[in-house]
Image (tube, rainbow, N blue to C red; front, side, top):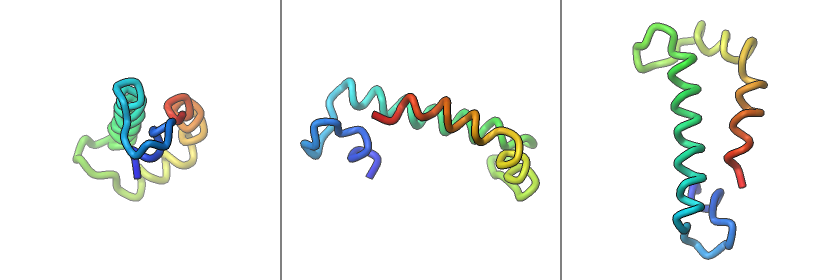
Length: 69
């Protein structure tokens, strides 16, 4: 599914440039996860999740949308 998101030529494969886009997208999600995992447990609890939705999600989505081709 992730490859299909970045397969701009609809060939069923991704080239290097498409791979770079995918890698950046995944890195952005990891950064987002780490920001919301305030206690650095490797998990996001309900309180952390609630704070993420209320305070930060819209600006993060805007930032991450640059990686979707």
